[in-house]
Structure formats: structure tokens, C-alpha cells
Length: 135
Length: 144
Image 1 (tube, rainbow over the protein chains, first blue to last red):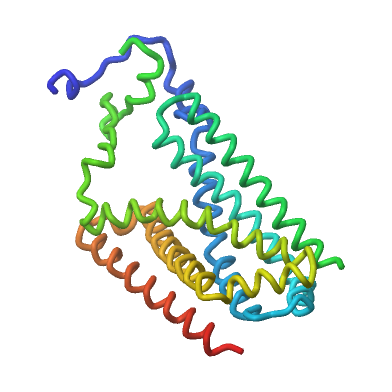
Image 2 (tube, each protein chain N blue to C red):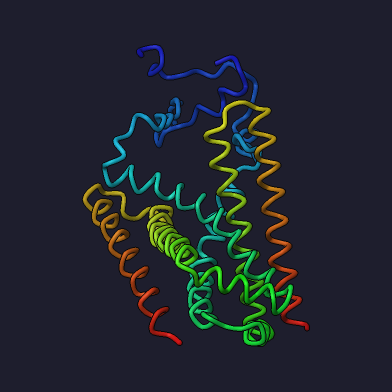
């Protein structure tokens, strides 16, 4: 314990600036952290909008759903929701997987599978909204 | 310190002195019944659950885009007892993650770290989650 708590000394040749520039375990500095916060702030109003839209569309038939998604503001807000939601989900899942999956091979494969799935879900959602909006 | 990787575990305190960064203890070290650690892990659990829940969201939109038949099938599935139960769980996770997310943004702004405040905001999150979820379902049953 005393060895652990002793003030460390640095005897490697690496400047403080070198460490600060885009480093950290993810090699991308604080960009990831900021993107998590920005998407979560964006999702606050977007999720409230989504909750209201679900109540509006409760029991809707196909024609009502298509008409709703064809309204320009609904198209825009759904696309914004999809973008922020899946970006936020991607970063959250990455953080969880990186924290709990220790073995490199397992972690990398799982990250790629989850990220790939999230991209497919995001594209499917986006194309569906666009198709409803423009048909 | 000989290894470059170790550099990531070293920082400077406010006096400029080199210190080892503290490591978070692993999950088992926490008493999850406590409101602070319990809500913390619930944020992750609900986050992952909502990730699975996006399958419902995407399926809904894809079926709507596929056409009349597919959309009436998925609307019927979501309106069935099992569908409603799953959607209830979804809204519970959503409102919890939403409320606790606001709490997290407060911490990111440097506010609310005092233990009594943290306990109070934690209780507030639980209360708000229950109120919002119940309000949603009351409105859902009153509408239409």
C-alpha cells in the first residue's frame, strides 16, 4: 500500500503536451465525453417530443401514421431523434462493453457486432421515416 | 514509472504535484442497495435495456414503411397484453434514464455533489420516474 500511495516520479520522455493532445485510453481525448453530453442534452427535448408523438399515434392506422410522418416538422424531429438516439446509444454501449469485457478479442468482436447492429437499426429507422414522408 | 501506459494513470493535483489517479473499485465493492450506487448501476442497466428497446422503435417504423398489413400487425402486437407489459417496462426504463440523465448533466456541470443533495436528487429521480410513467399510461388509456 505504501508503495502505491508514494508520489510517483516520471522517468519516461513524454511531454505533458504530448499526453494532453488527443490521448486517454480511447486515443481521442475528451471528444467522446463531450459527444455523450451533447447528445444527451439534445435527447431531452427530442424524447419528450417522441413520448407525445407515441400518445398521438396510439391506435393509429397506416394512413394516419403516414400522414403524421409526412408533416415536415414530424419528419425533421424524427430524423433528429434517430440521429441523436443511435449516436448516444453507440457511445453508451461502447462504454459499457469496454468496461466489462476484458479479453481483447472478445471486446473487439462484440464492439464491432454491436456497432454494426446500431448502424443498421439507425439506417432502417431513417429510411423508414423518409419513405413514409415522401410517399 | 517505466511504461508509457502508466502515464495515463498519473496526473497532477491542484498544487502541481504528481499523483496516481484513483481507480474505481470493481462492481462487487459497492453496496447496491444504497441509493447512490444502486441508481448508478441502474443508469447503465436501463441504458442497455433501452438499447434493446430500440428494436421495438425500429420495428415500428419499418413496419409502417412496409405498408398497411405490417403496420396493423405491429400495432396489434403492441396493444396486446404482453406488448403493453413490454412497453410499460420500456417507458419505465426511458423515464428513469431521462431523469437520472438530467442528474448526471448536473454533476457534469459540477453541481449536486454533496452527499445529502445527492441522496435527495436520487429520491427525486425515483419519484419523478414513477410519476411520469404513471402519467404516460393514464393519458395513454384516456386518449382515443
